[in-house]
Image (cartoon, rainbow, N blue to C red; front, side, top):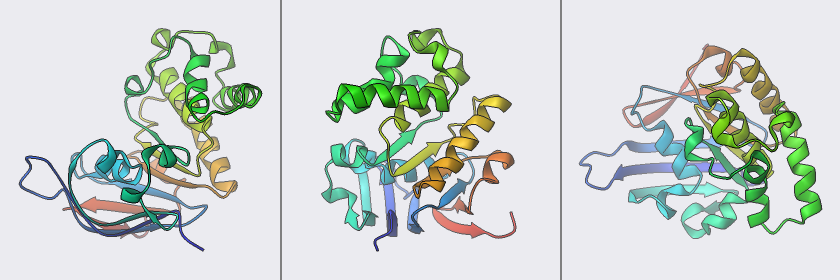
Length: 227
């Protein structure tokens, strides 16, 4: 059985940068596993998530070497639209992901682009809003929400796509205690369904959700024991 994520000897550097930010990174993430990435700011954690999601090299460019496989297929050989059907990514700043006039439109946008039937989209909207406890904001303009509320909607919008792999790039940073608990429950349920999750995180309570914690330092990944 092929693993959801397999990375072998990955090197990457951005255009106009003399140095590689990732140096011979190896990473295998198994079905139903939660992996947390830690490391100093600028160590390349977000870059690695962008590579897994196909944003690099399909949208952002740079020099990349090595293998990056999703379900046994190299991301460079997959169309970005096919990757987004199965890989969801949530960024630290929700304003980079929210652009629709209402919360409902925001959540419906992804499934609509996948040509999902309206009845099924309606079911997904209700399901994910309930999951993040934001049902009462369904017809609200996202611009009127707090930073934490926006983040919950960004997470809900990705969950509505029903991905197999979820990537969270410090997506819990703006949430209050209740919001973190709510998303923690979502993460556990996501894993329980046999899905795979990679999260970049600094807070210890979030790291406790992970099966493994890996540190990205000097362009290399190292598993932390006894964290």
